[in-house]
Amino acid sequence: MRTLDVGCGDRPKGDVNLDRFFYGKWKNFIIGDAHYLPFKNETFNKVYSKHCLEHFENPPKFFKDARRVLKNDGVLECIYPTDTKLTKKTIHNLLNLRWSSAFKWKKKLTGVDKINYGGHKWQIPDDDVLKLLKKAGFTNVTFYKIKFPTLRTDIDREKRRWKTFLNKFLPEWQIETRFVAK
Image (cartoon, rainbow, N blue to C red; front, side, top):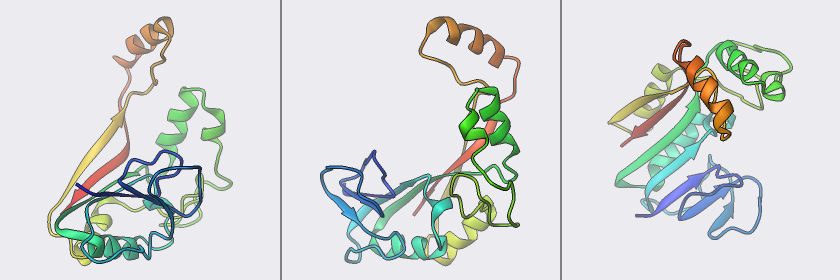
C-alpha cells in the first residue's frame, strides 16, 4: 500500500512524504505544495494529513488534488482541530500548564472562518468539511471525534496517579476530528 503523507513536518509517516519545508534527511521526502501535488493521477492508495488542513491556503483545492492522486479505491485521512471558539483548547492548555500553547494567538478571533492560533488560517466545521469533500468527488466520508482527558497524564507514575484520579471527575474535551473519505 503506497501512502502519501502531506505536511509531514519532522515526523514523516508515509512511503512518500511531502512538506513545504525541508526538516532533515528523510527517505522519500519531497518539497512541494499540498494544493498542487506533484504526482501522476491515481498514484496512491492513501493520502494522510495530520494538523495541516487548518494551515492550507485553499482546503478545497487540496481535497481535489488529493482525490486526483488517489486510486479509485483510495482513502483520504485527515486529523484537524475542531474547537471553533478556541476556548476549550486554551482552557485545556492552561489546566495542563502549557503556557506558551495557551497564549499563542495574537487575537483570539479574526473573523468567522479565519483565526490566528498557531498559524491556523481556517476553522472549518465538520458539516462544511463534508460539503467540500463531496464537491471534490469523495462519496463515503466517516467522521470520528477525538477526545482528550482534561488533564494529560505524565510518564511519572506519581504525577499520573493523581491526574488519573482527577480526570474521573472532569469532562473530556473534544478538540480534534479525524475523517476518512473514499
